[in-house]
Amino acid sequence: MSSRLPVIVLLGASILWGLSWLPLKTINGMGIDGIALTLGAYGILALTLTPLLLKQASIWREHKKAMGLIFVLGGGANLAFTYALINGEVIRVMVLFYLLPVWGVLGGKFFLKEEIDRWRWLGVGLAISGAFLILGGFDALGGAPSWIDLIALFSGLFFAMNNLVFRAAQAVPVASKITAMFYGCFTLAAILIAGNVEPIPGHVSTDTWFALALYALIWLLAANIGSQWGVTHMEAGRSSIIIIMELITAVISATIIAGETMSPVEILGGLLILTAAFIEALRTKDDDVPAVETTI
Image (tube, rainbow, N blue to C red; front, side, top):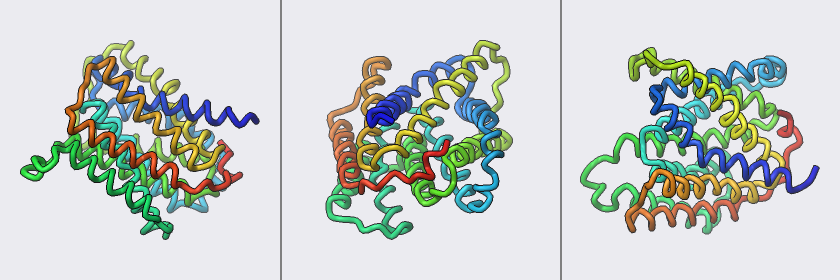
């Protein structure tokens, strides 16, 4: 296999993630709210990959705890991320989501007992400083951040914790872990709908549901499989740098297409977080690609 193929696949998947706000906001504008949209999209994906989940049951049944954590953390991350993107400002949500260096370093330190050097701690400090500026700096101390800001922050936290479980559960095939994540997102969305947090959409056209199905089966499925396949076929540090393209794509596209802007202070905060992401990527150990993870 060409060494360029994983790079191309991961780059393409990162661009899809960075542009995912476009179909999400479009479908939302057609009449499907955030939680219901997530319920439909991830329900379709879960059903699509169920045959693979059943086929690999003899493997993942021995790792039920890891699958349960992926169900909750991965499902929660995707639900929170999707909801924040639909209801918030794209750039702000994406930048706050990219506090991943903070959560990754802290999670690696306390759960995986990783050794953290001064450069990675510097990245944590930069990321926290950047978030502080984006959330309003010292003015933010006078009141709580907006609920969308909090959802964006929690989506990054859940995603980072889910990544730790993904890394730890290397004996479980990627397809099983992805499907557990899809089922988790669908189930959590269903619980919120059942709890009347958000109503089920009433008068929605067939074209809207068709657009939702296309988004799930083409865009979302390609982004998920592409990113997971890409990171399992290259060194961790190299993949981490490429994934940053997700943030860059979102910022550029939202600026050009949606006309979103950031204040000078918010731009400074975003640059600090981007710098922290690069530090974390460059300091990530280039582990060998685990052979068991190449099974989709």
